Image 1 (tube, rainbow, N blue to C red):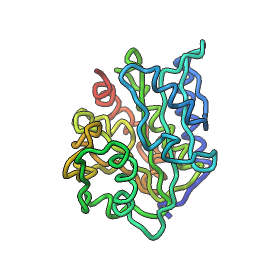
Image 2 (cartoon, rainbow, N blue to C red; image 1 turned 90 degrees about the vertical axis):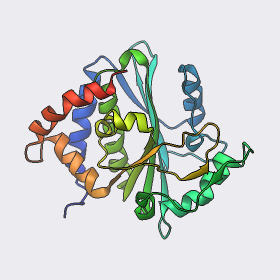
Image 3 (cartoon, rainbow, N blue to C red; image 1 turned 60 degrees about the vertical axis):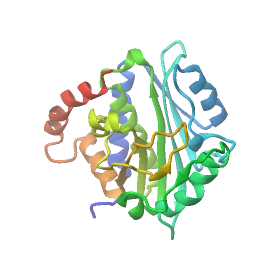
Length: 249
């Protein structure tokens, strides 16, 4: 079946991506301490850890979350990306947001922020075993090449290997979507106005897009990156120039 999880193919794809990152003289670590992630994000210029990965709102264990640290040989972390699993069986992501986003984005800050009761169509279909994928950051001197593409695809396939979710999703600013970064991340589906804010919180962009992959998309991504899919090499060659341009500042 097209959405059947194949651990061998997925492991091969993860190995390809990890080797490409290590060839740039960088190290990869899997981390579970989200207070530590908050400290790391504070060390980056212009980066704050989102509410989705703050321990004041969620309990994190190795069973439901992890983050990747990409570092130089001396230990300096130059990139992070995180993932959190939620079982939304019996509820749509859009309905889940009506509860969760008010609790983490509105109530703690006060003000007049208001969330609409409708969301983009993608949020209406996402349900079951779901992973939120976010807080990806790359230091400026490493932008402009394929590193961000490698890290985001690696983390997606690690999510697939760990949880075999029905869906994985993230948010992305309209600016980055228009520059092609959504393609670089390996997402197959995207829709504008991911969350319908009637009045957005002061620190939340109102133009964020919703990006997502279903299980079948992750299966295919693993096949392409492992070289198992037909014309996988030509696919990569055709997309790389555009991806590199999109990642440049």
